[in-house]
Length: 132
Ligand SMILES: [Zn+2]
Image 1 (cartoon, protein in one colour):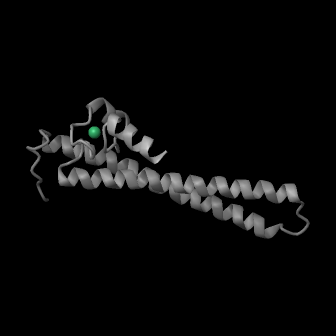
Image 2 (cartoon, helix red, strand yellow; image 1 turned 135 degrees about the vertical axis):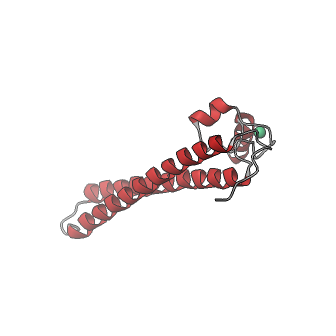
Image 3 (cartoon, helix red, strand yellow; image 1 turned 90 degrees about the vertical axis):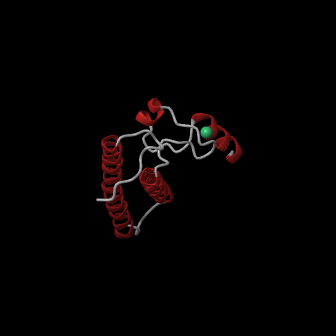
């Protein structure tokens, strides 16, 4: 097993392993969630193909809304999964727990609530303001 230099972060190998395990289990959960959501959206599509005949406008409107919801759910899951993937990469690089914006350490309390966080609250808010 590759042993990474963790002296820079002040974390012990055991701590890093623990973080990795929890990130990875969330990642796997999201993968399972994604698979399930894909299955559900396929069911939705089958139903749709099955009874297009005799649809009235209101009905097909509902289905479009359902499909949009399913698609945005898929996107959300993928986004979140990408965040965990990113956090795992940073953990391997030894930069996990440090802000991508200002490189300051992210408070442990924040990481406990958002294990996939890669920036401090201040930088996140700045970025969101810029994006808005
Ligand atoms: Zn920052």
